[in-house]
Image (cartoon, rainbow, N blue to C red; front, side, top):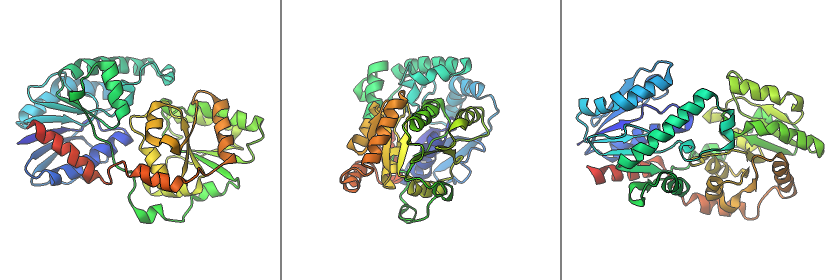
Length: 379
């Protein structure tokens, strides 16, 4: 049996992490299946090894992402299936052909397909708006022909049913694993040096790349409210955005009047993340949409308190282990920061975190076992 693992659209950090970990494990977990893996060239997958039952095909990409996607969806994926004599296609990323001649499974990771009309859309360029009009329409057509759609949470499953009328028997929920299982890093006492230079009792880490849906745009208003309440001498917010891109530059320009309570650390490497959590008192995440929210599990794993948006995805992920606010209201956010200052450690936080983390797979091997089982059901 041959399976085409279509990871050609694994370009975002979160998506690439899921795809990379599944690909690294699946040929070991399912040795009786031959896998042809399609991955974009020069996107960080070069360490994935060829195996006796796995051939990795790296596809060159030009800078026109929209044109690439068009040819992939309407021509290339079907051609790859035919060329490699595939018995099943597993698309690891949101959309593929509307109809294939073989069984087709899609892993839906892009939450914005299921969250429509959200506030962040007003920051989209016309190009971005047109892109998502196409993606959502295409997904709607594909969802009627697809054999199975996998999602990472019950929240995504419910939205999939409500918005696209996908029946229960065509949805499979397979959560991702905890993001960091290296106990030596978790227990490390090394703190981020840039953060500890700020001698304030309450350091808040906004650990996120600069995307509109992460809602960095609210931070200057939060800083203004902190100053108004005289909290800027106690509270400091640390951003982790790239100053070289257009969106990052605009955000950094907007916070210039508030550098007494905001700093930008720049993008953190995987190795530097534990030290940032250790130096922070809490994770501050005013995000407007998430497909899963691995960062919540990461914060819990590091024993970091969570202040985040009162949304369906965060409530499902964090339960009573977070303090919630309206992410569109700076007053609500600062009210929650004040509550955190009054009680910076929730009762029995550590014990409850352990119970919460036990609800999720303990390794990518466990996650991939579920994907392999699903594939075998079809072939």
